[in-house]
Length: 248
Image (cartoon, rainbow, N blue to C red):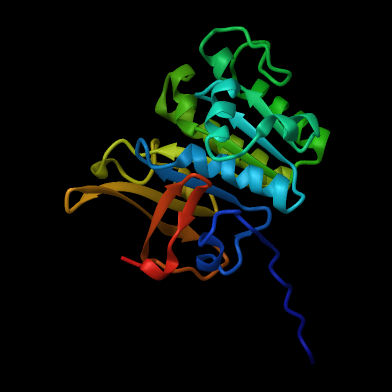
C-alpha cells in the first residue's frame, strides 16, 4: 500500500544565508526563540523577519515591543532601508506598544496596552491584532521585558509558557527574543525559553584576534534536520547576512 508523506511547509526567514541552513526556513506554525547577549542583533532579526514577510512573501506580521518604543524601532529599521510606516498604513504590519505601559507612560500608538501592563491584556492585544490583519508572523521583543513587572521567576516562566501557547494556538510562525546575561548563565534569560519553544537560535558576539565577531548556532529545531556548526554573520546596511560557506 502506498503511503503519503505530509509535506512540511516552510516559512522563509528573509535573512540571507539562513534558510539554506534550515533546509528552506522555519516550519510554519512553530515558535522560535532567538537568544543572545547585548548587541548580538536580536531586535534586528525580529524586524528583518517581519519586514521580509510583508515586503517579499506577502505575509502580514505583528511586532510586540516590550522594551523599546515603536518610534525608536522605526528609526532603527530605517537604518537598514526598512520603512515600517507604509507597511503599518497598508495593514501589513502592526506594532504593539507594550513598552510604554510597562514603564507607566501613556502611548500615542494605535496599538498599545491602555489598561496597564499584565499578561492577559497583552495576550488580548496580540490576539486582536493577529485577527485584524490575519497575521502569519509574530515577533515578541524581548521576553526579558516581562520580568520587570512580575515578581517571581516562577511567574515569569509561567507567563512565557502562556505566551508561547497563545502563539501556537494562533497558528502563526513566531519568534521570541531572549537575553543571555553571561556565558555561564545558560541559553536564555529565565532558563525555560529553550524548553518551551520548538526552536532555539543562539546569537553570539565574541572577541577573536582583537576583533569582535558575530556568529550563530542553531541549537534546536524540532522536526527538521539542521547543522550544529557555528556560522559567522554580519549586520550590513541591509540587515543580517549569514555566511554558510564560512563555517567556523
